[in-house]
Length: 202
Image 1 (cartoon, one colour):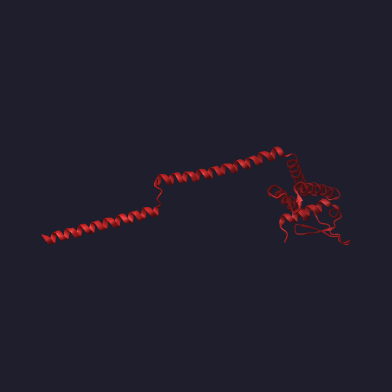
Image 2 (cartoon, rainbow, N blue to C red; image 1 turned 90 degrees about the vertical axis):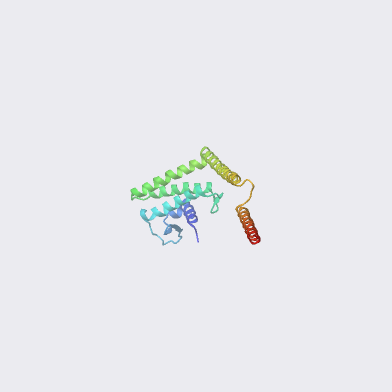
């Protein structure tokens, strides 16, 4: 079963190739664009039908680009994925220009996606000045966490040493206490026996 990011990447590849999309040779299956080569397939989807699949496709891919630690995303590099996004935006803008109907909500969506794609292209092509400080911050945060962890361990050991300088654990202390009590009881019994013997002699 395809996961969400895989569906989004396939949608993006389909849109970037544009011929089938502009010719309406596709089917929408929930949020998935499925290419159809049937000559008699002439279904034309409304703007409202396209809004959710397009929103899902671009935002899912954007999130995956930012959050994935892998060098490839479903077989494609980040550079290829970003190129697909740029080509897909060209396809969508061309599609909207060729349609006589105007739709304000769809225009807002296109403008929003175009702006985000532009920002991503700028970040990954010219974003070393943004990427380097971000990575440095991550490394510094990690180092600080490790230092705090070690300092806690040292503090705990020092506190334990102050409580028990001899290094005996609680079990040893309990055993020693029990032995001391037993010795005291034995001494007391011996003293009682001595007193009884003295009384008998008197």
